[in-house]
Image 1 (tube, rainbow, N blue to C red):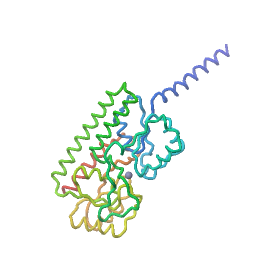
Image 2: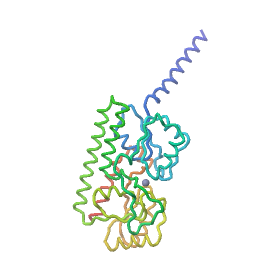
Image 3: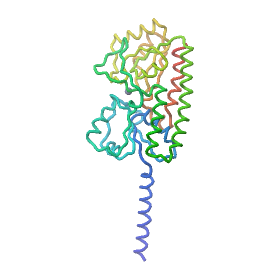
Image 4: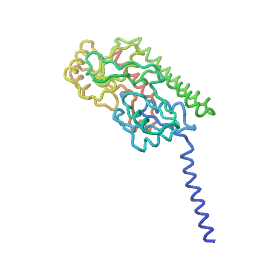
Amino acid sequence: MKKLFLSCILVVLLGFLCGCEFSSNSKKVIFTTNFPCYDFVRAVVGQDSTFEVKMLLSPGEEVHDYEPTPKDIVDISKSSIFFYVGGESDEWVRKMMENGDFSQVKVLKMVDMVSTLEEEHVEGMEMEEESGIDEHVWTSLTNAKIILSKLVEEISLLDPEHQEMYQKNALDYISKIEELDASFQEIVQNAKRKELIFADRFPFLYFVRDYDLEYYAAFPGCSSQTEASAKTVQFLIDKVKNDSVPVIFHLELSSSKIAEAISKETGAKVLEFHSAHNVSLDEFQQGITYVDLMKRNESVLKEALNS
Ligand SMILES: [Zn+2]
């Protein structure tokens, strides 16, 4: 009797343990590197899907410093889809692929989904030795729509049963992006000036090309530099003064030190323009989206171009 009782407990306990195992394993995992990759996949798969979406970068972490842990690499090799940007900042992916077996994983690269531009060096910018394609393709809302459509195709191939749902999810998100795009176009059409000044890195080449805006910045898009030379700072101060630019921008999760210095000399207002590379822990837990971040840019863009 005692034996029977014990084995009953054992069966219940095992059942419970297996149950837990099953529920966490029943969803297929999609690994993404940075926030745009994460956000676009999340928008397509939605809440009740076959897939669970994970972001490798921790919220608040600097994207360009990221390195995967050995556990990350094992987890990626067991996932269904791995979606990364494919630029300078995730060079580690190439090494990881060469040294492991990822034959079971569908590997998707954001920069292959759209047309890319070469990284640009405008007048006054601190020079970088290396330069290649500009990886920040997601800062163009037009590109964001294309990426979402491609993701629907790829994800549906792995889960054709839910294709309609994925299509609907993406279309809902795309319509929000189109609304924003129209609003950006209207702001630019009615603008007093078409010039933006960034006292920071400049990952918005695709964004400014969409709206025919001019820009000056301290560093190129993925630069690891944070100290601007006196010459660069003076160039930006002169630009702000000569062109009566009312706003000077810095990026999210970045020091506004250079912007503050220029503001002190010129009286221009310091504001943040969000590149969506990553979000803070708070924002992440609140479920903030790419569209939310771009909406913030809408109001600061208006102020920079119209006041
Ligand atoms: Zn970057």
